[in-house]
Length: 442
Image 1 (cartoon, rainbow, N blue to C red):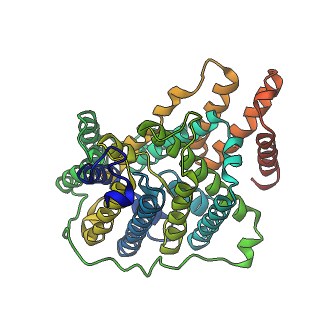
Image 2 (spheres, one colour):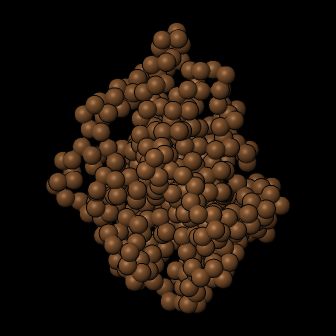
Image 3 (cartoon, helix red, strand yellow):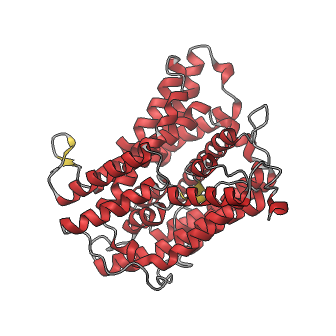
């Protein structure tokens, strides 16, 4: 193994890579429970039918595990990086709440859009086009996109816990903080925050489990076991759908494009950030073997769509493994093994109420906004487009809208302030396309 992954040359050891793989797994394992709790809402009737909910929840959980494990394994074997992959937070919310519930697109067709995105991802990676597309997205918009997604998923978590509720006069207001759901979510959030501050590995996962136990005392957790048979994957496996109506629909292709852009730039930003923190990047800030890393990410998305889950992306939680000392793809191999073992814990996953996963959404959302410090807020031509991108996502309940508005405002403000030379031609082309989208397709 040392020779295959160059462990010794990287200044690491098999033991260190194992510990790194465990740290990454513990930090990101919450997605195994959280992702199904988000995606299952895209299934008609699942939210109101417990039997249907559990059936699809189990299938989506297995899809989440398989997509994450395969993507992470490929990242380790093919790209030799200690980066883990899983369905992206925010992307799963876009899949469920915007594409399926707001736009009314059937979840099977939405999976078809993700499948198509994965194919485009693979094609563009092989052709080497991804670098040009990356350069077209201003850095400030990339950063703001991640932060906006963070606000979006935090809002979903607050809503799911009943902490934020609708109001006819103000649209939203504070819910009943004495309800079992709200108390469970607050308890879980405190646990996660304290453990994370104390640098305890797996703080998010521990917080979810602690909130689940707390929820049992509050009457909202029904535990029927911990270990059980692997859930039936047939409800979602190979259910992705293409039909003539969707193929000729501009809305369908806008969804494909949005999945592509959000996944693409989220992955690019994460890879660059993790690569920099681990000392992988060169003097120009470029990541060696980046195309291989992108391909691993693409195949994770491709496999996820086949099994029935939303877009996969590289996880920033991989930083936990890097902090533990992981430096090679061997750590990712270990992480993928632990992910696969989770298929035997479906009863535990099914017992976890939304109020227990809500703290994870809120807390991960808070982590995703930390990158805002990198934006040059004193420069209005950078700060305002970033702010519009970020704030539009939760307020319009759409990641696509945030990116669209930010990409339109950025070059226009640069133009009228005499800074048009800072905008490349590809950014202008994208801005024009987004304007046409708002006029004719939105």
